[in-house]
Amino acid sequence: MGKVRMLPASKKLKGKIFCPPDKSLSHRAAMIGALSVGETVVQNFSFCQDTWSTLHCLELLGVKVQALPNQGLVKISSSGKEDLSEPTDILDVDNSGTTLRLIAGITAGVQGLSILTGDQSIRRRPMKRIIDPLRKIGVIIGGRDRDQYAPLYVIGKKPLHAFHHTLEIPSAQVKSCLLFTALWGDGPSFIKEPIVSRNHTENMLKAVGSDIRKQKEVIEVYPGKELKARSFNLPGDVSSAAFLIAAALLVSGSYIIIQNLGLNPTRTGMLDCLQRMGAKIKTFDAREEWGERQGHIAVEHSILNHFEIDREEIPSLIDEIPILSVLATQAHGRSIIRGAGELRVKESDRLHAISENLISLGALVDETKDGLVISGPVRLKGGKVKSYGDHRIAMSMVIAGLIADAPVEVEDIECISISYPNFFQDLQKIGYGNFQIFPDNSLMSPHEQEEV
Image (cartoon, rainbow, N blue to C red; front, side, top):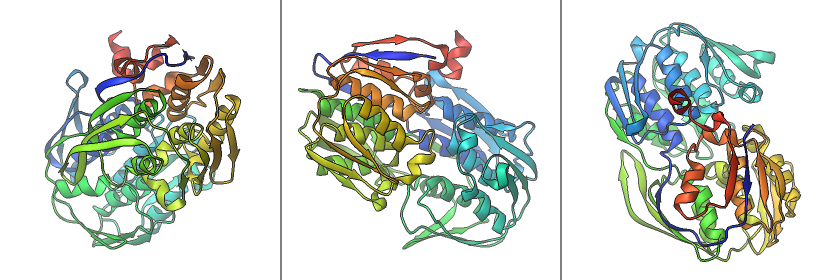
């Protein structure tokens, strides 16, 4: 298993950089391309372990996929959702929860049997949240251990019953699963969303001609319109950028610019939180394409104050809680995170993982049932920490190593390839190179491994 030894940053970070393409948008662009008539061209596609899983599953559903990683390009050719076919093999999503939950919604309308599974981590993640609402609208679906976990089976049919559903938890994955299923409905369906989660699926479906409307808390889906393929040029992933943002804020004298970054308001909760903390962050040259705001940001080293995050804000920054926790160790005062219980059922129990690691480095952290309380600033010491097989925990600990008083060794870093294969190269681009990797082939994307 690969590991990295991080030494404290000895000089300021600086430069301009493009972060990896948005992973959430890449998943959705490929899936919506599969549902659309014609050729969908996705530029600046995120080629990481998770999105390779999505492309593979779509091929098994009868979609023609042309992946061109050297050009950052994917082409999806489809005759539309009605021509998707029973998969010829098990749909293995590997470590991608997004792939599993969203593809489940698509296979609900595909005639025949679909079996969906993933790695050990995926087979521990809760699936009843999609099984129950799909079953209520007539989908034949089930899972292991009384419908709690994958593997799942789906016996698709069409048309499906129109439905009304209220989301019990603010989950973009559950919402997107139901949005896809609603496209096969025998009438309009209504999804109530009391707490807003990321809205990429709605934006992209509208861009290909789907009749989707939003009335206050309710998303209305009117099926029947043919979806027409189009091109998507994707922005950078704000969840990946979060680690470079944190590095610049923490290392004295640093100033970086991150270009062409996704700035969808349902995803920028971390930026909002950082500005409340006193972080020097400036957005410029912002624009909007097919409902998605994007632009550039400038980040400068800052003295940070404590913060509080409540349940209502969690959906807009849920992926950034681990790196925000690292920042909290250097912020002045007592930072409090509440309502983040969903982090216990991600790739790892992220609340426990970040708490254990930070405590081992000398941080003052109290782990609660649904959050963390972190007091700062404190001087982090060196030591060994674990990734728990979780890419966001691994990268958060790498950033903690930049400001520790002694070397920090992060174990099992191969999981970083799930979302950010070029993470260490990008750290070098902005001026940090004080690390030594003990390599493992799994640090490379599947495509890169094939080329070796």
